[in-house]
Amino acid sequence: MEENKGREEIYSKRVRAGKRTYFFDVKATRSNDYYLTITESKKRYKDEGHYYEKHKIFLYKEDFNKFVEALNECVDHVKEELMPDYDYARIEDNDLDDELSWE
Image 1 (cartoon, helix red, strand yellow):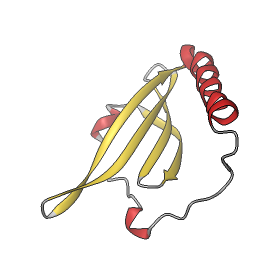
Image 2 (cartoon, rainbow, N blue to C red; image 1 turned 135 degrees about the vertical axis):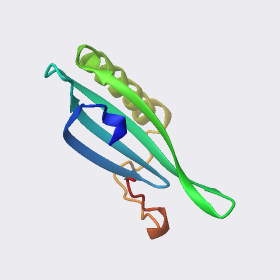
Image 3 (cartoon, rainbow, N blue to C red; image 1 turned 90 degrees about the horizontal axis):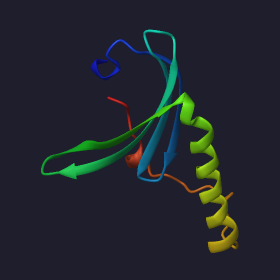
């Protein structure tokens, strides 16, 4: 895959979320250092076909703790302060048409 540019993928996790899919990929640099890429992929339609719009974040090990802390703080704020009555445990059915394949 051209995108890796010599980087080895160590671990990968896919999360389907409605019309979006998130990919969490642990990768290694040539010097055996590790980082995480988070990719949001969304199926878009144009003229006679479709394409995948992708957005990517690179997260480096020295930022893991700060990132997780901020993410948890924001999620907790929404869950506890803004939408405490929402059932976050419910599972939504995804249409088979929304399934994404990583091309």
